[in-house]
View 1 (cartoon, rainbow, N blue to C red):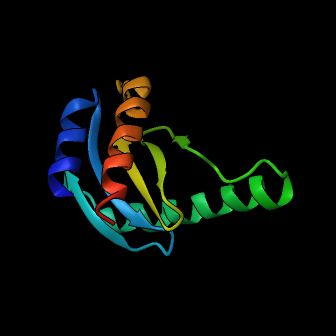
View 2: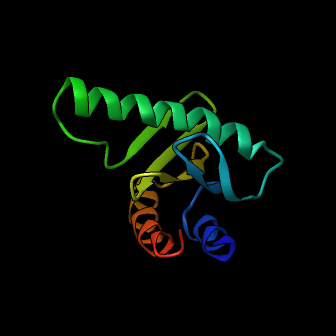
Amino acid sequence: MLAELTQLVTDVNGAWAAAIGGLDGLLVEGHAQADTDLNLLVAEHAGILRAANAAYDQTLGGGLARELYVRGESLSVFLQPIGSDFFLLLALDGRSNLGQARLYGRDAARRLEAQL
């Protein structure tokens, strides 16, 4: 799984970290090119993804989130669910390519699902 995450960071322009997290907020595996707390990134974004799932599925009737992109002033994160219990997190900088993140993230999530 680590090799897959490392390759994902290499392939996506502007990506600086990739991780697999559980919806329980626990880090499964991760790779970062910068000094960052992947445990914290996964824990916080697991809560955001759970909230989005609850809003879309239970309140709005739109089903579970299929992907989620959150952009802040200095941090952007793309989330791709992996099955029903895990998700792929891809941390991006300001010059990132969201299209690449979506394309490569979806492909990586499919391959990683077989390993989880």
